[in-house]
Image (cartoon, rainbow, N blue to C red; front, side):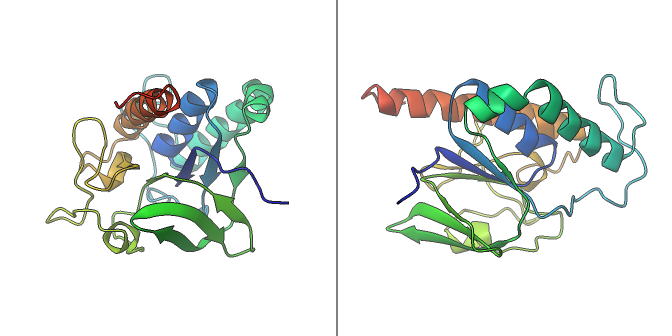
Length: 194
C-alpha cells in the first residue's frame, strides 16, 4: 500500500524546524521532521536573547522543546500527522525539479512535494546546490523575505538562510516560513495561485 504524501518535509530539528512543524501542524498540514540529532550549536554553552530561555544550554533548550512538543502538542501533532524521524537522510529524490520523496538511512521513505531544510554553518550537505538553489557567498541559501528560494516549493529559514545565528531569530523565521507555506498550500488546494 502506497503512503499518502506529506505536505512538507522539514529537514533539521533545530528551533526553526521544530517551530515550523508546530505552526504547520496547527494549520493541519501533514509534516515530517527529519533530524540526525547533530545540531549546529551543539558545542555552544548557552543560548542568548530568547525570551524565557536566556542562558539555557542548546541541549537543554532542545530537550525542553521536544518535551513540550511531546507533552502539550502530542495529541494535536498525532491528529495532524506530524511524525519526528531521527534517521539521517540517504537521498532526496526529485523529477523535473520537483521533490518527490526523502529516503532515510533506515529505509524509511517520506513522500513529499516540498522540503524545508537547514544545513549546518559548515554545510555538510550539497542538497541546496544539488536541487539548484542559489547560494550566497558565505554558503547560505538565497531566499526572499518569505523564505522562498529560486526553486518552486523549496523554502529555507534559520541558519541556512541567515548569518544571524540566533535561536530566537531561527524560530521566528521558521514560523514565518511555515505561515507562507500554509498560505500557498491552501491557495493551491482552493485552486488559486499565491
